[in-house]
Image (cartoon, rainbow, N blue to C red):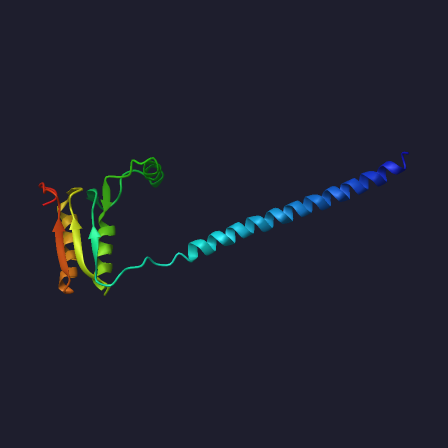
Length: 153
């Protein structure tokens, strides 16, 4: 009986190794399939459809700042929990206006200032310069709000 034990153990080990290799192979195929699917899904999103003759609506929320307060993890956590930030990046506004100026599909810029907080003079001057460049392209600029306070005006 002792002579048969090593043979049986060898068969069990080879069988186990074969099952383990098959399991690892199957899980790797599934994992890489998911990764490739995600890459294809993200890559094929494309650009949003923008109809010809549309208007860009900018609605700054809170203060206009050059850099957001806090770190990115805290901001992401607050946004996930529904808190969000009461700040708008100046660069985002200026980039949006400049992109709309060059886009032939965009015919007007609408500034919805009802939720805007404060902004420093230099930030307002930078935003004004972007709006002036937009106007020089021959496109309309419209400012709207339910009520203006000193900051919005």
